Amino acid sequence: MKIVDLSKLLKKYKSGWVAIDKKNKVVAHGKTFALTCQKIKNTKDILLVPASKNYFGFVTTCNG
Image (cartoon, rainbow, N blue to C red):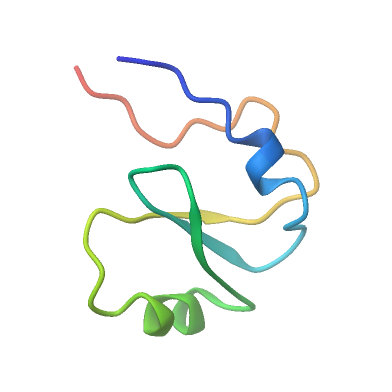
C-alpha cells in the first residue's frame, strides 16, 4: 500500500470534519460530522477525518 502524506492538504483545517476523495482532494468540510456527511451525501469512496491542529501520526486505514 502506498503511503500518502495528507498533512499539507489538511493544514488549514483545525476543527470540524474533512471529507477527502480518492484523488486526495478535499471535497467538503463541516463543523460537525453530520453536516459534513450531508455535504457528501451521494458521493462514494470518501474518507472522513476529524480536523486537528496536529495530524502527526494520524492513521486512517490499513489494507492487509
